[in-house]
Image 1 (cartoon, helix red, strand yellow):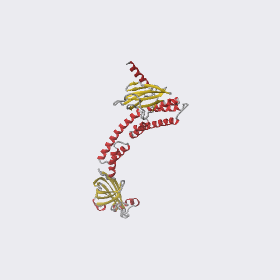
Image 2: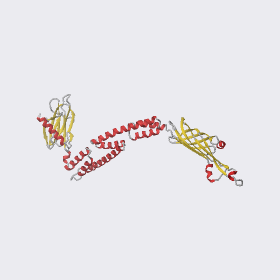
Image 3: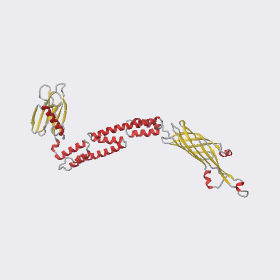
Image 4: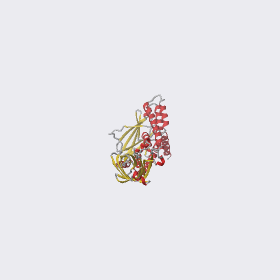
Length: 434
């Protein structure tokens, strides 16, 4: 019992100080036969004299059946029972100061296997190898600034086996530090796709970095949560036929490489097929108002509004004449609501105002008997509600043609001005939707 406890303590000490890596070379021959008895098989592990291994099998020390030497190498012959049901074997090779080397086989009776273990670094300059190992250990632990300093110190060794390798490791560390800073900044901005991309770059180069591994897992959880919320919002807008808002959110889902990207692509395709081109701009003309513009939104699934302004050339003539009985300046303003009837036809309606001017002679009392008759401008006012239809003809996904008809009723505020203003108007318009 004391011997077993002592062996466990010795093994713990070896593991605690294991830093360097052993190389193992398979020297087995296909037709090699072990000359042992029964169903025995043999595994021979050879090593230089300065490397003294011991072997552990199933948590117990495996003692070589025979030890012999050839030149400067020592051979350790390990014999196993390879009878049916006991073919699978594994051992761990321990050498003080080195990382354990595990081996596994499925053995068959009379089989002979041969391996050679050695320290490749022992033939090189100790300064170079020691600092390179220390740098690699720091890098695997995620201590990149310390690892960079260690690799820089390698250049002070008297003998450098591979200077390009040192420079490559330093360049790798610089890249990792840059990727980590970008990833952290992306995470703070909730750009989880960007953070995942850069953390993933680091993890590929250094899968031993536990910090990056955990950060990557956290960001992926955040991204799934964020994508799920965004997708639910997009679906809500889509169900309400608010395609503009839905499209923006679906595009964000795709840009973030969410799991819902394929569904978002399908919805975007549907939106493109049903793109409504809601805004219409038309040129309006009617009797006595040859100049007119109307702008408004004519949406597929909800009401909206419009505004129209109409006037004539006589309105501009007022600024350069003192009076002309032939002038009949007119201004009409209207606004209202739009609703879809049956695609592609919309109805619109709303209130309006009409002002029609005329020059009239002043009375004799105002001008005097001997004075020349003067003309004064009178504005006739009317309330002018209207109703009409608009039709759309889609040309491309970005633009279409619209035709607009308006029927306007005019209610003069002064009865004597009815004939001057008129009681109805028919207005035609043509323009574009986009």
